Length: 96
Image (cartoon, rainbow, N blue to C red; front, side, top):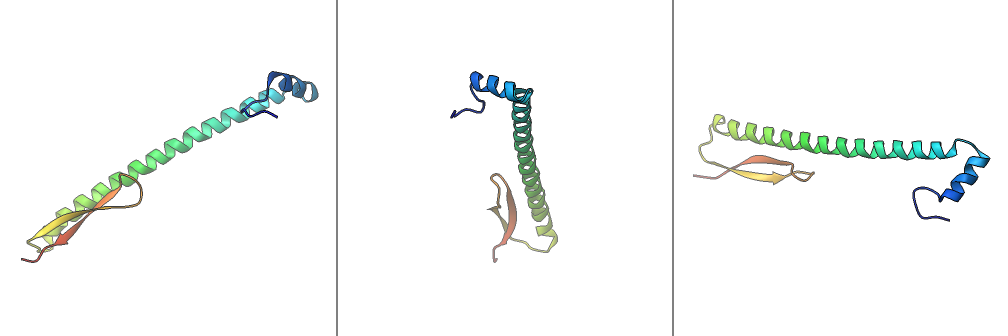
């Protein structure tokens, strides 16, 4: 038994004798798995970036809408939401 992603050369030769093309199949499967891992990491990063932008836009919107609601004194409280780097800004009202 081996503890590596691929069998040792001797085992590869034996596989090829029993079923020609086995080594190419193994390599193709490993390449596909690597491509899927890369795509998954890229998708995760894009998702985090979208969430971060959404949080920033919602925070800006909340801050811009606070004076329009007729509130004179308001402070902003930054809340952390879910994913790292994703936050929201919520108006916190301070009595006069």
